[in-house]
Amino acid sequence: MYQLVRPLLFRLDAEKAHHLALNSLRTLNNWGLDGFLNRPVADCPVDVMGMKFPNPVGLAAGLDKNGEYIDALAGMGFGFIEVGTVTPLPQPGNPRPRMFRLTEAEAIINRMGFNNLGVDNLVENVRRVRYRGILGINIGKNASTPNDRAIDDYLICLNKVYPHASYVAVNISSPNTRNLRDLQGGEQLNQLLNALHMRQLELADQHGRYVPLAIKIAPDLDTIAIREIADMLAFHRMDAVIATNTTVSRNGVLHLPGAAETGGLSGAPLVGKSTEVITELATALASRLPIIGVGGILRGDQGWEKLQAGASLLQLYSGLIYKGQSLVGDTADACRYYFDQNPTRRVFQRVVSQAAEPEAEEAAPRMESMDIPDFNAGQTGDVEVAASDAGAPATTGETPAADAGAPQPAATPSDAPPAAPASQPSGNHSRLV
Ligand SMILES: Cc1cc2nc3c(=O)[nH]c(=O)nc-3n(C[C@H](O)[C@H](O)[C@H](O)COP(=O)(O)O)c2cc1C
Image (cartoon, rainbow, N blue to C red; front, top):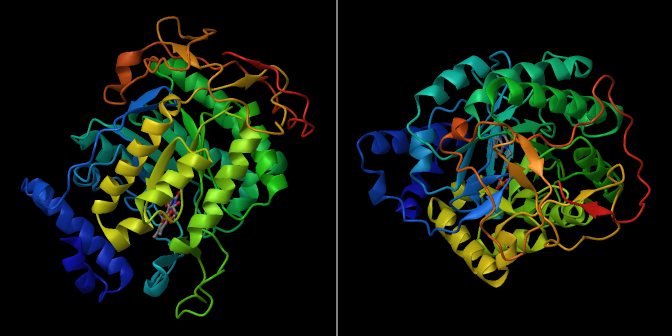
């Protein structure tokens, strides 16, 4: 069906087509007619971040920035939905046009610039949805906020979205907000992660529910930067990393009309680069936290490759523009095939190093230990389980408040931001948390 509609949509300006498609989907959903369009998606349950996902294929951030289309998007069969990026105050984003199709390359360039109606509006929209599945809310900073006050913006958003989110994604990797990506390293990252984790623990206490934090990174990072980020994320007890955002590279598309547009490139040309980042992250992280793989998935087998590279969950964006809803089912089918071959990977088994989260030289075995949050005691339990035990405690994301008693990851020093972790490998002293 989408293949029939696509030529019409592609005649319109990309942003207009985006809104037309989403509004039409919402209308059909309201009339209960979207079932005719959407192909059923196979079950493929996975446990990641202490939650049970019905399938590992999610919607990436940016498609529904204000959380206006959640119920309609849910009808497409995603295992989870991420909305945002949302900022503390509403902002218009960059002048139009700011979204461009590179059709021949099955790619998109965008410089939207976090156009959104502000965090309060998003929260109101989320309050009204019927969807009870796993909902990620992606937060950012306003363009007018300088980087040295960026933490304030992220904390404002975290406070407001926390009670409504299954997990919160922290976007520090958009190329369309000046200097945002500088937050991905060094002391800026150290201070941001420290502040986020401290607030996360306070909020968990306040709301009686631990909401995982996932940090979204760019594909334009070298191996050293990826290792530094991996160590820093583990050190500050982040719960997941999302790899990747769009790229500023134009490799493979330079000859195409539109390639010179400023912004982030997504879609088919990004797939290899983003999978390479996942591979490097998986090595550097050594199962200390799970990876959500995104970037250039236009076929099921490309999702399979990201799982093989080390991702535990996947997200789609540009592929939906080119392939429509059938891509969700195709990718879920490929995931099912992957997990049938690799059943232990259905549950992400977190390994935590006893040393101050040293960099690992190679990926540790994924099945030696498992993060078992003890929801009753409000602490994580040091429990060893068999690799084949897929029945790890998991929340469904459906009733967030049901798992009251927040599982508390081990605390990091609280008063001052801790020094960045040493980047020298010091062995693999794994223990359970
Ligand atoms: C038009 C557009 C807007 C986007 N907006 C956001 C955003 O607000 N926040 C974010 O974290 N990522 C945003 N992204 C990045 C996507 O979530 C995704 O990481 C990236 O496009 C790579 O995946 P893909 O190749 O499947 O599109 C946007 C992407 C596109 C194409």
